Length: 95
Image 1 (cartoon, one colour):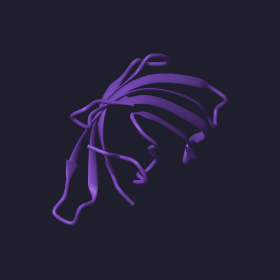
Image 2 (cartoon, one colour):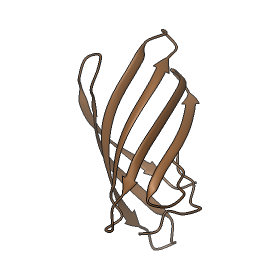
Image 3 (cartoon, rainbow, N blue to C red):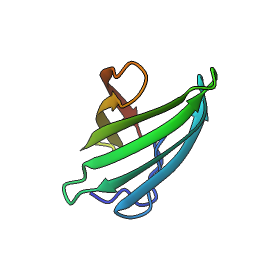
Image 4 (spheres, rainbow, N blue to C red):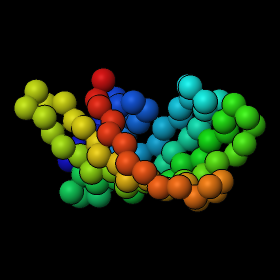
C-alpha cells in the first residue's frame, strides 16, 4: 500500500514514515508519527492538547481498504495512553 500523496481526515503521508499535524473540534493542536508496514497498515503514536488545556497521548493501528473508486478507508483501533485510558475504533475516509 502506497499512501504517498493521499490526504485523509486527519492523516497525510510521505513514505513509510507517516507524520501529520491536526486540529479542530475539541483539539487545539495535535501531532502523530507512524510507520507504514508493507501490508499498508499503520502503527502510530499521537499527542495533542485539547481545548481544556489537557495534554493527551495515545496509540493507534490503522488498516486500509481500497474502495472500488480507488479511494482509501482506514479502519482504526485506538487507545489513550493518558487520561481515562479508553479504547475505541474509528473509520477515516480519504478526502
